[in-house]
Image (cartoon, rainbow, N blue to C red; front, side, top):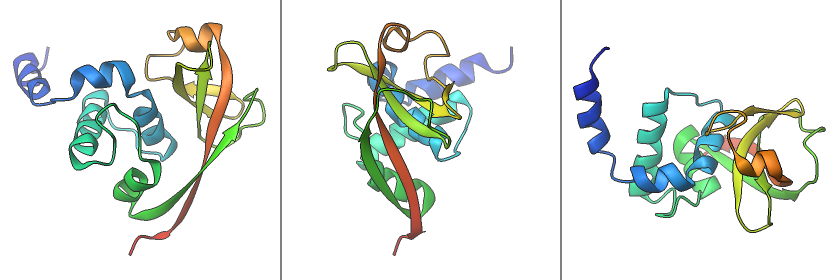
Length: 145
């Protein structure tokens, strides 16, 4: 053990922990796609801060360009793309898997395979039983003015 009581106290400060446990997969995947890979606690804190500041909606809907600009200081352009396979995806890309077309789970794909899953690889029912339905093409532009 290191400092479990200190960690417990820090976790109490995260007001959005319940909603993050259910809906923050997209936010965590976006961090990964941008190359921002903090430890789990820091990732939770970053998402909490983004919700408080309005870069992520209270239900954990990511405002891609707005949060991306806040994280990187650059203009972030997002293109929504429908897909049916991940085989051709080379760069780090957020991909939405779904079983029913309504509910789903975001994972990070690179080189045609899932490289990051906020639940842990192999733990998402949407990934196990569903299929990829959409991705977001991320383009990083110039500095935000």
